[in-house]
Amino acid sequence: MTSMAGAAPPGEVAGAREKKGHVSDRTKAENRLGWKLVAPAVVLMLIVTAYPMIQALYLSLFRYRLTTPEDKGFVGLSNYWVILSDSLWWQDVWNTLFIMVVTVAVELVIGFAFAMVMHRVIFARGAIRTAILIPYGIITVVSAFSWQFAFSLNNGYVNSWFHWLPLIDQDTNWFGSHWYAMFAICVSEIWKTTPFMALLLLAGLSQISEDMLEAAKVDGATWWQRLYKVILPNMRAAIMVAVLFRALDAFRIFDNIYIMTRGAVDTGSVSILTQAQVIQQFQLGLGSAMSVLLFLSVLLIAFILVKLFRVDLASARGEG
Amino acid sequence: MRSKLSPGSVVGLLVVLIWCLLPIAWIISLSMKPVAETTAGSPQFLPKTWTIDNYKTILKDDDFLHALVNSFGIGIISTFFAVIFATLCAYAIARLDFKGKRVVLSIALAIAMFPVVSLVGPLFNLWRNLHLFNTWPGLIIPYMSFTLPLAIWTLSAFFREIPWEMEQAAQVDGATAWQAFRKVIVPLAAPGVFTAAILTFFFAWNEFVLAISLTSTTSARTVPAQLAFFVGPDQFNPPSSTLAAASVVVTVPIIIIVLLFQRKIVAGLTSGAVKG
Image (cartoon, rainbow over all chains, first blue to last red; front, side):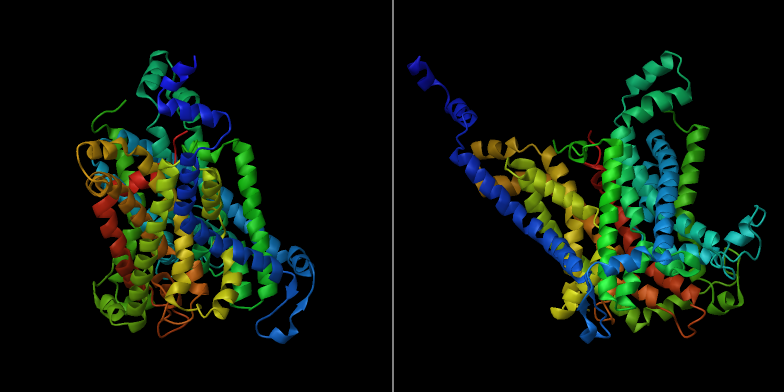
């Protein structure tokens, strides 16, 4: 028996040893090399996020305004109390959640329709791909300007094209009242980010086998039945990844609002409010507390969505 | 399922094209309207009289030209370094078996979802102390960090598809290790690296929150921030046609990149995104 074990190929012997719990030199070397290669990226990612977040956590406990630095003093959790008892904060929280839910829902429908078109069309594929990538690649600020001018009272085409619709007149002032302005902001956000949604959904759509759809068709399933019973269940992972990423992205909305209204007529988002506290008001203490609250909100939303979808993102991305 | 030129798919195609291109057509049309026409109010889609004066104005504007230089410089430098770090990291993730691989991926995922605005306060404070406020590195460092996750994912998905045995096969055939790497692996990996570079550059070109918060003059202000600050001579009537011309100018690079590399960008955006 012993002679037979000695005759076994070296690879198998090494494998057997590892199973017993001994870490081979090769494994150790691979571990070391692995960490050497990932270290620069990991350090860079943590230096810019983890360290400043710890600093924000610390500063959020102080009364600290840059214009009056000598007045800095420890105040405990009172910054958080000031924010959470302020109606402006809650107004902006609701605005942000409203924009997040509305834009992601609309984008899911339009994005799915686009993905279907891109999946079906076999001519002009290059043209359609180019067209859909332009909103994706364009600067959000430019998108915001384009839509702001489109909705503008003096220079926009929206009023003259759509004045026959209810609620729209030749002289509708889109940036003069809350819901009109929110609508314009949502349109710009949806236009800019639908391509991302469509492309992720297209990737999911192209993984559904034509045979399965063909089989359903032969069995007499209608178009709706095929959509609900075959296509959508098989796209679960793609839909979840798309929704998770877009929802967290929409929750951070800043550029569109900053350009279109700057938060006027109560259209601010939590990001707009936080940025204004630090950069315009120089309220580092209050601003830091808002940063911490914003960070916790994103964590909470991510947690809820992941739990809701019961999706393991790493495995959904093929990381095993 | 698939039919050539069915009426449904032609209509679908047209709807997608109009949806995507109408706002672009509008901003181009607006940029051709004379300033006088927009001040008086011109709600029609096309200009009454066409002009290229807005482009002349904007291309003579020093602040705008500075911003263009800043945007290109900051974008290219952050892309270059982010892609190098991401390539090393993705190689380790795709090829090596080491402890903590999942930790690295989780960190990348967390950074991808991180609310950038949360950093405005602490970075504003930190950068002032480190004299990085209103400098190129002050923007390049955070841009690198925030583009790393996307680059790492894209690249590790690409690298996983590469037939690495070919490297050994080449060595068996007599190539040196360096030759095998350069002649076999580099050509296979290059498209992935290139795609990651495009996506990274798009991020840096587009970024706005940090660009307005961590800069104060044109010495580091990038294009999106400069556009937001561009008010023109009359503060209460921003010159919409001039702004439109500036918007078109900064969109041209994006359109060129998209036209040349659309297939790669789509592959990069969707690779590794949906595999479950």
